[in-house]
Length: 452
Image 1 (cartoon, rainbow, N blue to C red):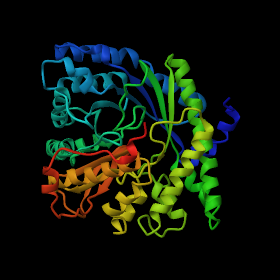
Image 2: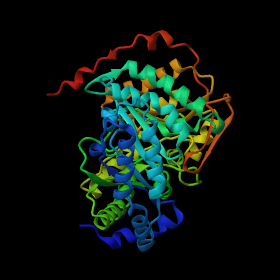
Image 3: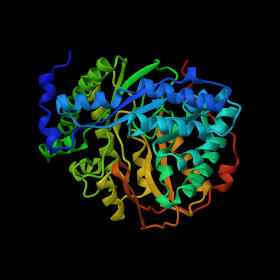
Image 4: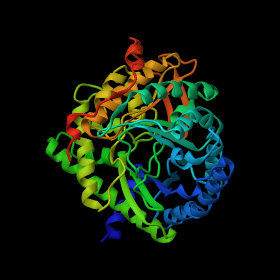
């Protein structure tokens, strides 16, 4: 049973260490909105979302005020639209994208996720319609987020999808060029995507989920950073134990908020996602946590080992605190959203190759990385393929959220504002991967996928 007095001990963390509920995300099934007429389908989607989520924001604000816990975002995730729109005769799914955007604005949420397709083993016609509609949709909407799952450990890597997504990312960047390619900041390419992730831009309401569900994402890099300052110079055993204890307290707070939201909205509670998700604010950085362990700069040799310890300890502490820890739960390393990561890139210590190595042991992957606008679609696809391979071989979720910033070069900066922050444009290896990407087909699943 949750002990509210334990949770209230985190007041100092909230006031001084950037501890917050990063998001309450309401998942909504849209399967019953299917219709051969895409306009009717869009109308059904808009109506259902507005009905189911009408009290989400107000309830979040009530809980925030009552408990004194900041709830930064209220969000919605929906059934992958490629599945819902499969019956539609029109192949331009941006019509549905606009319905999602309008519903999100009506409900007052920050983002809505689920303009998505799962194509790890192949494409349906609806999947292709959805993917081809991504650039237009993300350029014409404000709050819609999109994701495509191109690989799983069981299925291997769909290299046709990988090649296609490189081109889609380029098109999306070009259509949002006046805003530094911001459309790409709302587009994630996954391997082993999870069904209950409350974090954007990759959230969608999975097949195994109920009609509606409440998932909560908690974040506290600043709290972990402060806790490690108190054990400076101590052994890694003490470091790991300190992170675990801190993660336990953070997760208990998330569990309390999740239960309160579930009860007041009359919607089942799903999971608490304990992910150390940084922000551009000083003192709210995963990079600074790694440096507190003894690294001069994030990206120095030893960074991957430090991140592995952090990610594991966060998960262990979270699992002890809640019976339903899910989503991604670990440490995120988005460059543009972490002031310490930005500083490391600007010093020339942290590069894409080191970030790729770090993704082997953290929660997601190459996240919010800006690269020169003239980076080819094939190179973007090759970066996706490398990250998907890490996910498939290691049976973990990996992802790529990369922005080929139009008219920008290595050393320039892109500005997105808010939680998306600002990112230095990183150098990309320009050796060609074109022939590799053009082969197509599937990279087979690894032998350890045969566990039945």
